[in-house]
Image (tube, rainbow, N blue to C red; front, side, top):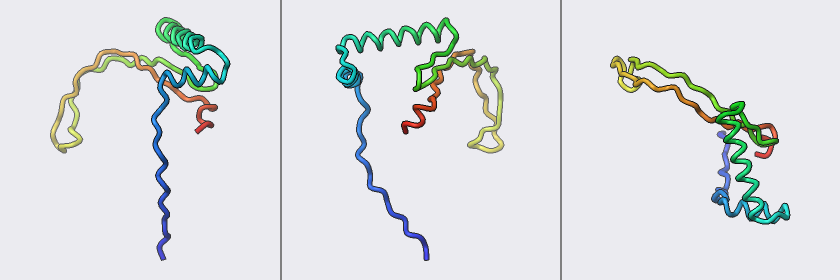
Length: 113
């Protein structure tokens, strides 16, 4: 006899917190004023910008994530088989060199899920 699978009840989807809600919650838990919490985030943003743009190209938010800049080289225009129409060739446009920002979760963040 076939196994019977039970459907999980759909959990209520909640919206992510807004910036204002995050600042208020952090102000309540830390005892700081809301403006001070906002200043901390602005300082963090400035540090990340400095380290990513002109610094080492990486920034670690301790215990949460690592932000890294990857440099992608330029690609030449080329022809390749069209995956949707077998036998037909298609041209792929050239792309300039560019920088890509990647965010990698650290172990603590992975364990939270």
